[in-house]
Structure formats: C-alpha cells, structure tokens
Image 1 (cartoon, chains in turn orange, purple, cyan, yellow):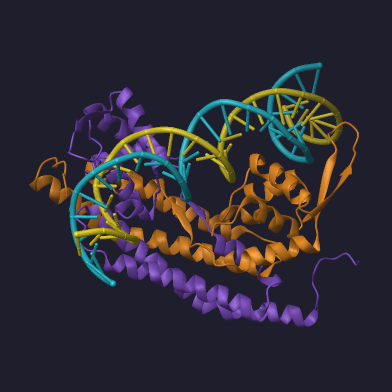
Image 2 (cartoon, helix red, strand yellow):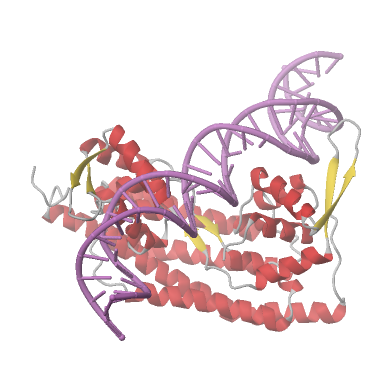
Length: 188
Length: 188
DNA sequence: GGACGATATGTCAACCCGATATATATCAGG
DNA sequence: CCTGATATATATCGGGTTGACATATCGTCC
C-alpha cells in the first residue's frame, strides 16, 4: 500500500513540523525530501481531513499582518493511526527514472550524445552522494541510517556505471558499424 | 524535466509496441516497468494527441468480433520529437519509498516491529535482484545495461542494510533504555 | 526606495493512476 | 459441453497530486 497524504502529514507533525508551511518544507528541503514528496495542494486538504477526524488539533496564532499561523498538534489517536499505517505491509520502492528511459534508447543516439547522457547520470549520483555526506545535525537514528544508506547506494551506482559504460558504448558502436540503422521490431 | 505521457508513448512505439494495449504491457510487465509507469488513462489520450500532431499514424485493423485493433506507427517527426525529449536535460531519478519513511520513525517502533520492517525491506531488494537476474531474451544493449545495473544496486542495498542494521537496532534500544517514553518534550 | 526572498495561507487547472465498462475469444476444469 | 477465468482491445471517469498562481506582510541587501 502506498502512503497517502494524510499519513505523510501525520508523520511530519509527529516529527515536529507543525504548520502547513513547515510540513511542505519538510518534504521540499527537509529530511523527507529524499524519499517522499508532498505539495500544498495535498497538505492543506489533508490537514483539514485530519482535523475533522480528530487525529490532530489546531490552534490559530494570530500575528499582525500575516495570515493566522495555524499550529497543528498530533493527538494520541493520530499517533495510533500513524503507527498502524507504517506497520501495514508497504509496497516496494517506486522508482521513476527519465535517465534510464533515455538509456534504453542508447542505440538511437550518436556516440557523443550517449556519452554526455552517461556523464550527466554519473554526476547526478555523485552530487547527491556529496549532498547527503554534508548533512549535519541529524538527531533521529532512522534518519541517519537512511542518509548513510543513500550515500553508499549513490556511490555504488555511479561506480557501476563508470565500470560498465565502456562495454555499452563499444557494443553500440559495433552494432552501428555492422547493421546500419535498425529494424522497427514488430513482435508477437 | 520529467518525461510526459506523450514522450513515453513515442518511446514505446519506437521500441515496437504498436497498440494502446501493447504499450500498457510494456510499462506493466515489459522492459520499461522497472523505471517508468503509464496507464490506460494516460495512454489513449496521449495517442490521440500524438495523432493530431502528426507524430504518429494510425491504421485500424478490423478483426471479427473484437473491437478494431488500432495499430500506431511513429513518423519521422515523431522520432525527431522523441530524440529532442530524451536529449533535453532530464530531472534526476525520482525515488519514492514508503519503507524509508517508515524507517525514519524507527524510534517509535517496538524492536520486533523494526526488525520485521528491515527484514521485509531486505527481502524486497533481493527479490527484485533475482527477478532481474532471471530476465532473458533482451536484445537492446541499453536495456541489458540497465537490468544488470538494477540487479547490482539491489544487491548493494540489501547488503548495506544487512551490515548496518545492528547498529541502528542497538541505538534505538539504548535510547529507549535511557529515556523511556520519548513521546515529545512536553509533559502532559 | 525598490527588488527580492521568506513567511503563511489557500485555490485551481492540468495531469495521472486505478478502477470500471464493453465485447469477444480462448482455454482449462468439472 | 457448459462454465468461469484469463486474454485481447478499446475507452472513460472519479479521485488524488503536482506545480503554479493569488494574496499579503516583513526583513534584507544594494
């Protein structure tokens, strides 16, 4: 089961982010940004639904000028709902990569184009690894675990591409030399 | 830039999948399933849009009984559009993980719960690695490259968790022993 | 002083997924 | 030989999400 917006908001509230604005930052720049996303269009309706169900409470702090700051607090019922959601069987990681889709069409590219694509992909991995390595002040153990895991996997991916790209690039070149463009495969 | 439904359909057509039904299978069970997804609700409107823009042609093969099979063919303009889309700067991989979100709340879980969660996550990685290893009959070089890369990264992830889970589980246990309830800072 | 970004709420169109509807053919099992 | 499940093939629709926008004020840099 995928985690819905309400569960994600409950999690953010439990982690100490207590306004809609802060919750968004948690998913945009904060700790959750590496493995989940959530935008205003989902957050504010979700908070209203949670309030209606008694899973959170809300106190409006009126401040001069700016709109009232609505500070949300997760209730005991909310914590229970979060626990249930997180312990239910979860669907496996959902991974969507434009780079991989592009690489699947490597045989359609000129050598320089494929080379640049692979360079960019490797750099993307190393950049993210560096970013993760520079993160400081993480207090929650789970968070620290995930950040170090992400860093190692990024480096592993980058290294694998570096070690195997030559084989791919040579194969493409050889095939191009042998059999010019390529068939349009009607299969079945 | 994320790849839109039209680009994904163009790619599938170029790869030899030439009906809406076949395109869906390509993203559901076929080669693209590991790094992209696309459903009927996106495919059929996208094919109509591509047809209107002259990026594909369509010939209806009437077959007795079943609805007419609409066979689509990518045009030269379509191939050009696909090339442009794939060589444009791509956004980096988008990764969404319910497991990671759950692990971020490791400090909220009983030892057995965390243990089971990590077991499941490791198994998910190995299962996918095995599935990728069993794939045969892949002809396109880019595809083969990606499958082998995915297999290695899954195994790397599983191994990393196996090697580092004890540290996480011990840390959680130690913290729990020191400051029992943990809830949040405010006394109630 | 003016541009810009941060704070803070919220809405809206565009898009996408998952389920459903519609029909027929095939194939395994009772 | 009938029945139910699965496969082929099209298409739509409700509901949820994203990304951009609207609104309004304050602080900061130049």
